[in-house]
Length: 169
Image (tube, rainbow, N blue to C red; front, side):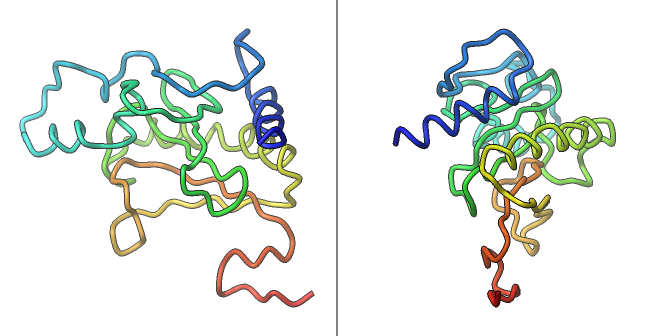
């Protein structure tokens, strides 16, 4: 446990953009956003219910805990709660969009612009050689949470994370 705490503290120290505390804490909320809005002006009541039930919207509203690595006005980066590898992280927009094609280009650009700094810090902290950048867009592609997000999955040589990879040395 102490080693995990230390690694997370190091990771956070590489990602901090403000004068926030050096030790990681559970994330308890972010600034006001579409997901947090109490006056959602959507014509489709099903979409309102999806936002209310969306785990990422709950994290953004401060209703569910998450380990925050990065935050700005447009997006948030958190550790995945079911990681494929140590340091597996998610970049999520603060506004609810159910799929990549529903996400405005400016939001996608804001999310993608964070990939270099976040992935470099994650690779350095986890001693990884590489990383996968992944978007599961739609149920057939494996999307489980229907709120646009980008996975950053740290990789090491011969980790055989995907069944299609050869584990030969």
